[in-house]
Image 1 (cartoon, one colour):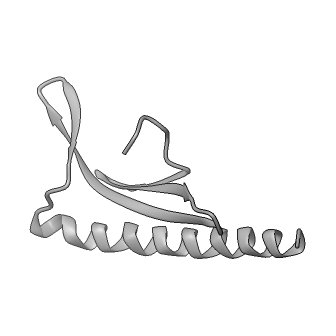
Image 2: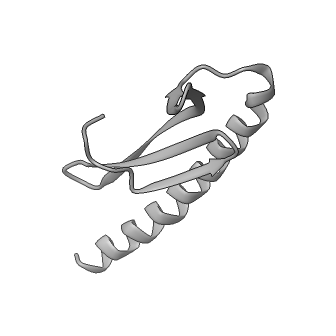
Amino acid sequence: MSNRAPVHEIRIGRIKAAIWANETENRIRHNVTISRLYKDGETWAQTQSFGRDDLPLVQKVSDLAHTWIFENGQSAERSDKGNS
């Protein structure tokens, strides 16, 4: 991803879902990256590797990300249709 910021983040414990907006010719499409935060010495870092006990939280943040995209995508599509 580029240096731009995600449009929304969902975090439960050390598991984080970042939602990114990508403009296309027809509409905005959303992508999600999921990561696990951890401390490497004094520095916070992140990885896309998950342990057994992380998986329920991965499932939960991905479900919440899906809900956020669905709700926000629906409102964006409705506002676009109103401009036609």
